[in-house]
Amino acid sequence: MKKILFILISLVTSSSITFAQSWDNQQDGWGDQEDGWGSEEESSEATDEKNSEDSWGDSENIDEDWSDDDDSNLSFGGVGDDYVRSSRPDVKARPYQRFTSMPFDSASQLITFMEVVEVIVPERFLDLGGDDYSLSDSLYQRALTFMQTKFGKREAKSMVDAAGIDPDGKEGQTIKALVHMPIIVQVNEFQKVNAGIIYFDMELRFKDERYRYKFNNFVHKSKSTNGKEDDITYLEYYMNAKKNARGNDQILIACKNHMNNFIDDLKTTCAATPFIDDDDW
Image (tube, rainbow, N blue to C red; front, side, top):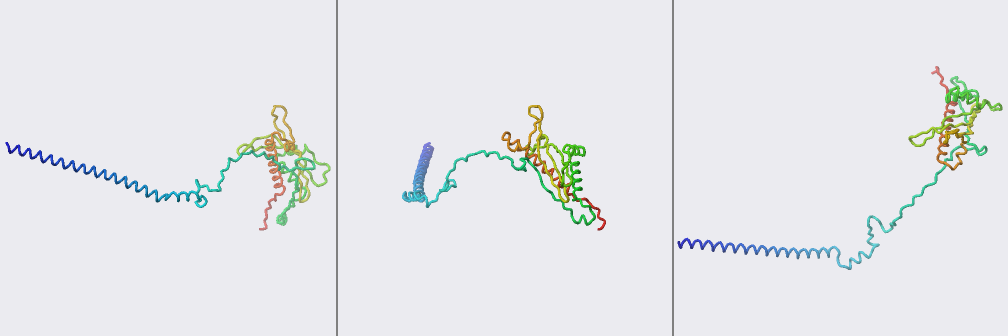
């Protein structure tokens, strides 16, 4: 019995000693951690002081760096010292520029398309036995053919009859006609509008190897806005009228485009070289 009690006492004593040693070791570890935290604070302060000294230097050097703006040539946002911030530009509407390209005869004060056109027959055509189509009577017949192709035979005849042939014509063959044709206005890139009818006097005079065309007395006939009789306006009025200037210019531009096409077709018809079947090849 005494032996068993002795053994139990010995075990309890050894356990107490072991527990005490382990607790001392734990305290030593926490002490080491405190020492480590203290070391980190010291090292952090030392690092901050070093970085501060390395980055900025002493205060005197800082003042020198920032005071000398010309030497540093610093710019913020990519803008140099010469940059001057401008105010928002003023937006001004440009005044409307009127259309002024209509051919105008200052003597008669009328819009007039007129030109003398020469017709030269190629020598090769004559060498092959072709007839000289530059003679006045040939050019006259070609001009009649042009009108019949453009308007139809019946309409072309009525136009010529409306004007009559000049009885005093002394320059060879002469054709006079009161021509009328629809006028199409290009409103924008995708829209065209029928704006009425254009009337004008046509005079064609022919000589050998040349002819002269003259178109004037242009009148625009359009639907009336009040539903009554059609409006009839001389084109010269559109050139000077201030009311509805843009609409007036659209009529003038459309008229000029139509007349340019009309003249080009006349020139092509009068200058076309007939085809000759040449067997001598």
